[in-house]
Length: 260
Ligand SMILES: Nc1ncnc2c1ncn2[C@@H]1O[C@H](COP(=O)(O)OP(=O)(O)OP(=O)(O)O)[C@@H](O)[C@H]1O
Ligand SMILES: [Mg+2]
Image 1: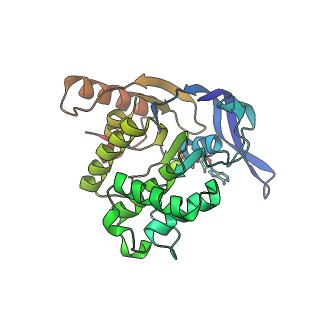
Image 2: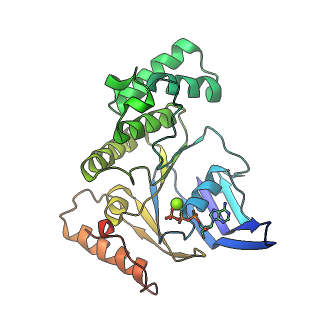
Image 3: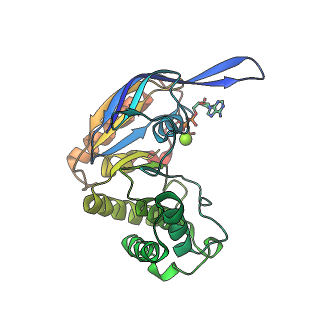
């Protein structure tokens, strides 16, 4: 689905004629239908990598192919969900957010768009909020709505940048369980950035650990089928990922929440 070969991404800084290398030598692939998780220290380049897959940015060096083609620009085949609670159109109801996206991105006729929107809202369990405006929703509901809108486009890939990062623990756990179910039901390929080791193992089929800025790939760890956080295997993977994250970055604080 995604093939990255020696990808490097620089940000140019016109003020100083300088450049910041955010990612260096990244080679990896994302397999169709898997949940591929990216973790790494803050500022290492996770969002940059996700934006490059989404087509918002282009690699400065190397090759990044999505379904065999360079990801030159964004498209509805790669729907993005951000951490930010304010990614919905504030002046449209929850249902109309989804309808509008379908009309614009997929040219869906109004009636079909409404039906699809209602099905998606049911899938993420916010049917009760269909006629509310974003400012009337909790953070968790806004994220559900953003996920519904993204899924409505029937993307081949769902790109998620810390989508549950700003939620309380209970809401976050609920949404993790639901995302796992949605993934099972739709088979959509997910690329997810998170700071939580537990979330990475629970949701991920594979977890790619990145090093400090500029980000290089440290290791890609197989974490598929880990839904029992109490299991010895889960604990073992947690230890392994923690070690990969702090290794050679001793001065780095691993967030409390990342530690089970
Ligand atoms: N628009 C930009 N212009 C210049 N430098 C940038 C820009 N966006 C990001 N960077 C730099 O690129 C590096 C990677 O940033 P990025 O946002 O990808 O990190 P991240 O891993 O997502 O961090 P976090 O975990 O805090 O979200 C950082 O050093 C950042 O300062
Ligand atoms: Mg980020």
